[in-house]
Image (tube, rainbow, N blue to C red):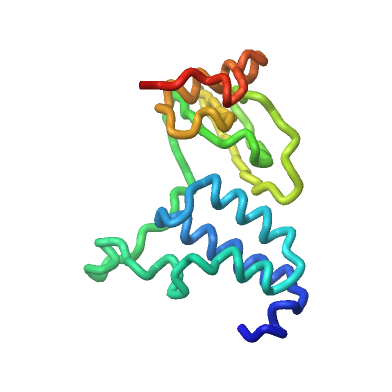
Length: 179
């Protein structure tokens, strides 16, 4: 892009292209969830092409498919992202950062769902995670994980979400160092 193009205002369609690119790179492991969240917020708030270009400048221009998955390299169709999870007469756990905007819908018959963790007001431009729950004789637990849960096991992350919900979560700098 030439220098004058950097100052041109962007459209919603250009922001959407950048968001899809960031999501693709996160899906193959080039961006962490934290980086994706931060860059997505900046993409949604971007006003110029230069602001959008900065968000992908350290990522390969070929896109997320630069290194195909082994099955794709052998001629098999690439695997689609998981969109459904089914648990018959059982339950499911869903883990999301507490900094995302969460929309939950659906219905339950002889079951239900629960949200565990603190419910923060999402920051402007935070990613929206939409979850549709359809439970039949089972339930879903949605854990809103605080920043302190990053890098922890799922068991430790669940414990931290429960502490956050009760208001007992120590500040990040008060966490004892694990050795």
